Length: 498
Image (cartoon, rainbow, N blue to C red; front, side):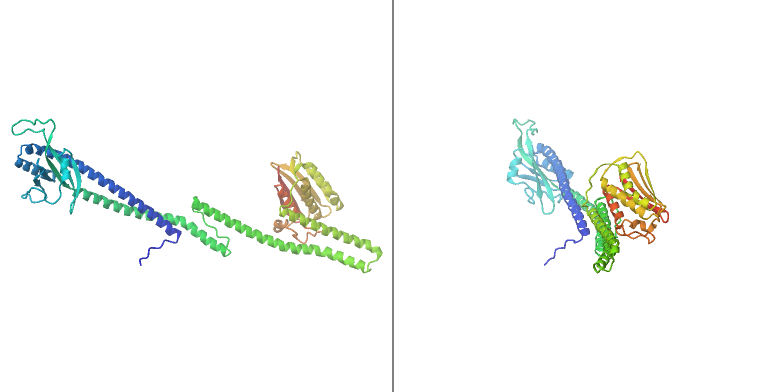
């Protein structure tokens, strides 16, 4: 059983095969129709030429045939046969072949009648003797021939007596046939066909080279993408592909590289969030452990009667302070959770920046005065009216000011400066505290992040203030920047678009 060739399984093979098939079929169809048109053109031109020659032969033989001078007819026909390289036959008025001459055969052999079956049928002879021209192709055993039959008219010739015919219309007194081989035309068409075949072969070869180059260009990026995807399946998400073009394939490569970057960022973010989750659990446990232990311990001591009545109020205050700290910690965790999950909606309104700054500053000023810290409010007019959530922005400033007071020693300075810088509203909190090391600046906005031990914190804070402040600033379309020099202080800058 004959097995058909299998279709190529690779895209490269399919592209190559499709290009070659299209080119080969196109060239074959063009070659077929072009050969057909050329063949028709040559045959038509040859037929027109032979028709003219047949008319001329009929005219030249007509006078001798009208005078029944067969010897003259023979000589004229023989001369014309050699001159035109055609087989000539002459029919008399009785529709009989009176003479046949073929220059391709022995010139001494001349005969009457049909010789090789290449002639006219009765109906065709009738057609010619009605005064019509006849043209047909004759298929011989070796060659094709064009056969043209022309009637010989009486009426245009003088007879031997010198008188003209008295007929009003010409009378057919015979016929002449010219049979011409198409050997030259066939050879010319064969040469043209060979030339077209060679040209087609060269065209297919060139098309194969172009198709190979184009297919490689198209499939190379796809192969790289395939390898990169396999690398991603193995856990390697850093396999980007070089962009080689600006077409659709190049766009696909750009999209793939962008997808790889997004996947890599997503994984990094997941790792970071997982780390934060673990840290959150550990930090929350740590933050809850001390106040819960204090509340439980003092409660058990009082229940057991181990604390004097005179000291109960003191320990009850400690229990209350720890309870307030726990409540604040839970509230901050809930706020931060809502912020990160997008469940907090701002109640935006037209806010006077000056009144917002004074309100926030005056809310924390007593705390700073109690620590003997110099509190400075610096407002640079003109200050714009900002559209935002007044209470949330107040919470941001209070968090930053409280932090600055917390880490500034007595005798230090905390400054709130508010100004406009182009298209931005700048609210800057600067302190002269112990500062933050450069390697910790990128982490201070993380939940429960503990900075250097030299920055001792009281047990009043929840450790979530900076994280909440950053989330609230971003909800307003802004951001928080920080600059710090150890032992010289820190500057937190809130930038909001206006």
